[in-house]
Image 1 (cartoon, rainbow over the protein chains, first blue to last red):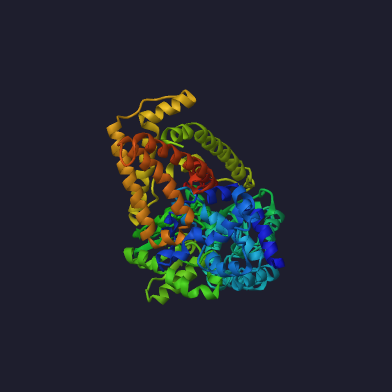
Image 2: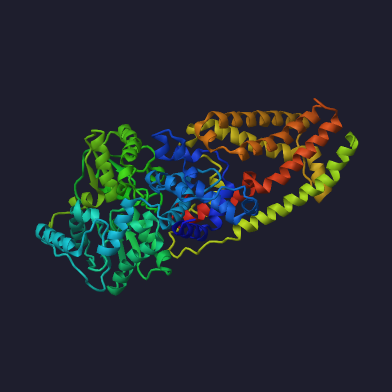
Length: 421
Length: 219
């Protein structure tokens, strides 16, 4: 056994807990999880059946934690997990899984399959079987502060740009504010309208807020690749920043997995509860709406639909706020089939967009989103995650569908009442 | 060993061994699985009505949105055979008598003609789900020896029970002995195969419901 495999096996043994043991013991091989996975439904290849993606981990569980499995191991009747096998499984554990969690909602015996894939990735990464693309993104986040190599200089440049455009100054490192806003690299590079929207909305609502120079990046590929100590390093920057600035609430930007990383995994990564609240921007906006602090005027009249980012809706529990917000500014909002909790993934989450070799498969899997869109024929597609947005734009372009994709926050900002009016 | 000796053995030693292995096996497996424990979730929970482990234990018996259409045979066949099995095992008068002799507990049964009908439907449903396992690429792909084996050890008690009530194939006492033997095999096999889902299904659903319920998602 190679040293890295040995380490991987040790990590896997550590992450196997009672839920995983219960899940493996409950699976009856009914195969229904396949029907919930877009990588199976769009390719028809049984190897993409979610529970099959865990086969090496299941065998390890059996061999290490069950009486019969240990007996078989002693008698030499069991097949040990090998480096070659884990290498082969990379495609199943990473390329063809966006951690969307749809499988976990359909399993009749109740297995939380995505919970297991997330843990399996811990062992895969340690044994050196994580895809290069995500490994690189994580390394860049640890060394430069962002997966796309965006530094504070780029953020400052964008702040300046937004200040010129809006005439509103962007606060940096201000202590004792209500909100500390985070950005995702994708927003800094591709979607500067997000920062501008936040500035305008905060001014409109009369709330104090700030960016933090030591913790501005929200994305955390550490959780996608499955390396908890790197994920912890990345999340700690935000925690330290928020605690230094004594911010009451940290706003996770329009990014799905950043929300999961900070809101749900964050306290568990650092080993203690947070001293501040974490909210996705959509939750913040909906709260401002209910407090009467967010008012809009005018309506979009074209046909809009909303793509639920998996990590926000199904995996994050934020389902209604985005709908309340769209309805504030849209007259013609239509839901896609399976919208909300059961929505289909764009195909790019869980680090998949960072894996070059997964591109062809991702485009294939996009056919699911395509069919959903064909069912409602929207003029524009709204979402609240920069990775979804990029993936959607690429998929739409590939299939030559002319549907612009917009971020929810910027649509809301466009409908703020005119200054001084 | 003649027929009578065989029947006496399965009713005596055989049954004792099987019930013993079953009880110890279930106890051991439950400890082996749930003894592993899990870490406390340190993130602040989001409370939403209907999102909890207990809700999921019940809710998961209903197919998720859009799933019935995807696998009607799996769902309907599955429901028919699980419910049928429960009726035949728990509501057939001779079974209740046996349970009463062992535990002192008893309850009213259903007419034997009705049980007969349920048994036939259940047998048919099991054949259908087996055919589905052979036909469907995903199910066939996932299937191992254990899947075929556990199907057989579940099917045989039902079949031999029905044959013995109908006095078919072998003399009654032989068929009855075979029926009891097949039940004993099932009891011995259950804790150590996927049939153990009969117990862990509750724990699995609860964990899934609790983990996701913590985030405010009713699964």
